Image (cartoon, rainbow, N blue to C red; front, top):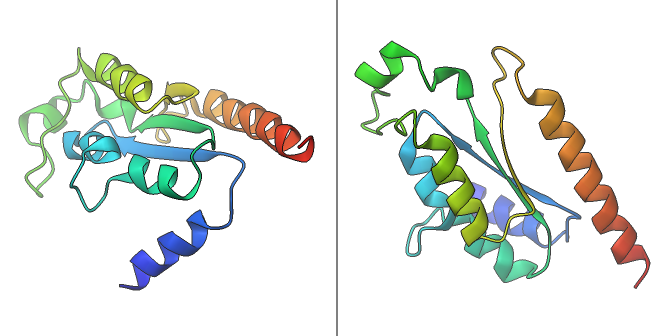
Length: 135
């Protein structure tokens, strides 16, 4: 209940950019980005409060994409990992479906892609802020 209230408050702040993250390790997290009827339908919630805010979709935990233990023994919560070969394609498809400005992946564990994610967010956020100021 507090979480839902907090989400609504943050959406009403009119952010310059929205970053939606999902776990490459758990396919349900990607499905929840845009799945209609899901209580975690992130895309719809953001668009309800701001129909034009730029969105960046980010796949996290890319280091686990080829991890044998992750593939053989997925998370104990019953979620299935996204198949290694299809993860980037699925991410790009969802990004296209939600009209995201960019789709990126990174690994906090190895550091791969981290700089690119933050650089991209800063660049798109700055552009969006400048557009807002110019109105």
